Each structure stands twice: as C-alpha cells, then as structure tokens.
Length: 279
Length: 180
Image (cartoon, rainbow over all chains, first blue to last red; front, side):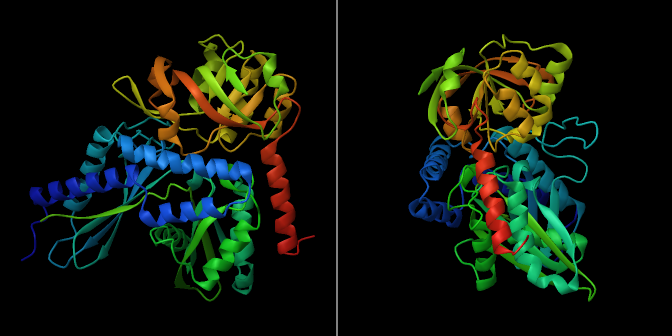
C-alpha cells in the first residue's frame, strides 16, 4: 500500500532521521576521512604542515569528546534521500527534511548560515526558499544522507565548459582550481570532480562524488590527486606535501560538442552521514 | 614567543613561519562587522588590539565552537583597523598584498588552523558582544583566550608565507603542464 502523502508520521520520522544524521555528521568525521588524515599526518615531511595536521587531529578528538561541531562553519545542509517504491514522492518528504534541519539547528546547535542572497537577511533556522537542497533517488529503503557544506571550500569551486578536444586538459583544470584556491578552502581538501552531463549536471555529479569513500582511488583519480599534491600548497596553504587527501570522480554521458567539468572543493572536514528512517 | 594583548612593538620581531601562542582579549569580526565599524566606528580600543576573523557558534552566552574564517574576504576592508592601531589579525588562508603592505612596520597576520573550532573554543571564553543585531556569525564577540597556538603567516617586514607557497605552487603548475 502507498503511504499517504500527508502522513504526519512519515514527516516526523524523516525529521528525526535528518536531525540525527546532521548531529552525526557535524560532530564525528567519517572513519575513511579520519584514516586519510592520519595517513597524511604520518607521511607529511614539512614541519609546519605536520603541526597543522596535528591540530586538526586534536580538534577532531575534542569535538567528539565534547559532543560539539567539528567546525564553526556548520555549513548548509545538502540532503540526499533514497525513496522505496511504497512511499509517495510528496511535499511531506521535503517538509520532514526542513523540520529536521530546524530541530538540529537549535539542538546541536548549528550556526544559522542561511540568508537571503541579496538582502543578506538571516532566516535563523538554516532553511529558506529552495534550501536545504533535497535530492531524491529511488532505493530499497528510506534513507537520509546529509552533507553539510561549508562556504570556504564551496566558494572556490569551479566549473569549466571545456571543448570536446580538451579531455587531456582536465588534470590541468583540476590542479588550476587548487592553484587559484590556495589556502582558502582549508586544505587538505577532498575534490569532487564531475565530468560530462550538462552545465548543471556536472556540478551535481561533483557534489555527489564527495559522498564516495576516500580510502580508494582509481588510476585516473590518483593522477588528478598527484597533480594537485605536486603544487605543495599544503595544509591551510602554509606549504607541505598534503594538499589533497583524495580526488573522487563521477561521470555522465554528454553532448558530442560539450565537455563540462566541475570541481567541487571540500575542506578536510568532509562531513557526511546516512540514517535509515524508522517506519 | 608567548604574546599577550594589548600587543606592542614585540610583534615587529616576528618572522613569517614562526610559531607563537596568544593570550588576552580578541575581537571577532567578519564582513558585516567591518562594514559596520567603518560606518559607526570601532566599538573597542583598537590600540594594540587583535581582530579575529571568526563567526562562532554561541549558545546561551557560551562559546560552543569558534574556528577561523577565510581572511581574504576582508582584504579590501581591513586597512582602517590597522590604521587605528590593531596589531594583529588572526584568521585562515592569508590576506592580499594590500594588507601585507599595510602591516609593514606595524603588525602581523597570525594563522590559526582552519576548521579547528573545537580546539580553538577549548582555549576561549566569551566576555562580551557588540553589534549583536548582525547575527551570530557577523556580530563582534569579545573573547578571552589562553595560549592559542598560531603560525605567523605575514610578518611586519613584508614576509608572507602564503605568497611564498603560492609562488612555488605556480612554478610547479607551469612546469607540470608545460605553460610558458
């Protein structure tokens, strides 16, 4: 039987799950990201860089111990839902997510970051017209994944409408993005790269790539990662071996005359969590 | 070196790359606070003061977490603070050439590890606020700090660790991708 779209129970359960996912993401770094930071700290040769990575690891431990957010830029929540066939695609889903964001903002607490783009008036609860962004895909279970995204790294993200003949230029475009960004996005970064699709799809793929585990890279991702690390920007732009912890790529088919490439820059605090909605 | 506010000529001895700790009083300020201070004046004594680029999370008068924000956003709106006697800026990511020049013979830029909001708050306590109407992130919070660990990013002699790293990165980039 299809669940009633106006079902207040579903909305409330989704709100709970969203708030729980946000608390998990904001306070505790995913194990794959933590492991990548530890590996980087062990391998780093630059003294200042080692100190910076040491501060980061100490900060992660303190946040978990005190149950406080890892970073004061608690970001804007980007939300991904998987929807099983027996649940209707309805406004109740979006309202549930929004309610979860409001609850998490007051409870954790999160910094209210969402403002009107022109008047800059703050809504106070991290929701607003069109925010949070909610992406829905079909699945076996009802799950909510949150990716709180900070502005320092989002602000230096880039998209390029490359020419079809420029596929070999992609590593240069990716490295150039970090060259221009320097220390601004709080390196060591994780780069989500979207290749193909359309202008908007490349950006969406780049963001989705940030949901992928960072403990493995294929040869192409490794090539991109090596090109970025060769820059020597280092943690916080103070120099060192560790500029990127990982580069993750997602691809889609595209127009024969296009090659969209998007690079979504993510600071070291690659916060993400998935919670299954209890029904 | 262990620095204590208000700062004086001791900051002139620092060199880019040095490690310091800072104790005393700091004032947070981001984009909106800078604009307000330019309009209405600086609400604290700027002589020897330290400005912290930070928008903390505050709950019930308590600092929950308070790491640094990207300083470069304030490049074009920072000069008046240094002219008024501010001796140090604390933030992340470094600042532009106009700020490096303005700091010459006067003050320093101190880098705090970005994202380390719990670590920073561990050494801080809240003691006041100005311009609270600007909201949690943009208000000027008065914070007492105890031995905050910092790296001198820009010194008072034109030394800029961030620029040195950027220039090296540019050379590497040009070599790797055969750009002339």
